[in-house]
Length: 330
Image 1 (cartoon, rainbow, N blue to C red):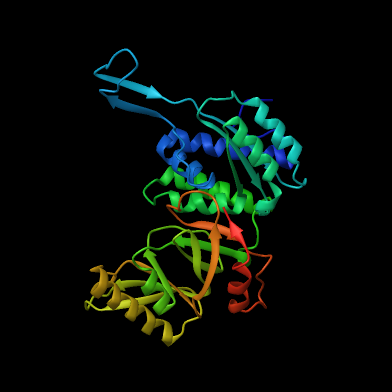
Image 2 (tube, rainbow, N blue to C red):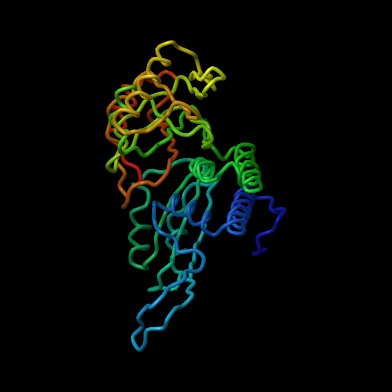
């Protein structure tokens, strides 16, 4: 059976997960090729996947310059999912032979339950580079996090589809325990303020999947890490005063003081008004580290990374920060 179906018929969990994921991608594409492009670009490592048609004007060819043209670049993406079975490197290398060599738009995506070390793929990367294929690896957890970040509240149908896919992944045991998830968020101008107040903020209506650790990313690396202890939303009450509402975690008066501080600094240093409709993620401390990204380019949105090999309920945040310095991610 090669066609993607609405209701999967597979008895193998791996085949069922593949069919469900392809159906999700199909739904994303029907809603908006740009939205599918955004998700694929993120999980493939911030590459530009040329989905959909483009409109060009006065583009020179070897023999003429037409006034305009409509172009659709060919894309070939091969998806390999691993649920229970271990990695089969030879299988991934054989997948490379299914591509038309020398053509742009070739992608090989590996989707797994658990995160894999960069050291697992040198022969795959070498083969892909030789064949002109972009290779990417993601976990189901990271895909779910990317989907949550991508969808907007007003995209009601798409949000239902994505919520159901995330529920499917959870029900099937395809996502790791949120206790060991680190949400990696890019911060530029706010990096110093985030570190000073040990707090990260975003608009209240921006979605996210559950996570336990916060990683502040800038200049190709996670440079601050901490365990989130409380999440607050702020609103302006009927008297015109800011009111904080505890969304999850444990309330501490010190967190209120930190939120007031980061609001004041953001206004004074950046001219940003955070007095209402923002969500604040408060940590015990944001501890310096250097968890370096090895693949090209930066990150445009949040990423999720499983750090179960260095983090547990008993692990101190300083130990997590120290352990991440000896690791990389892509």
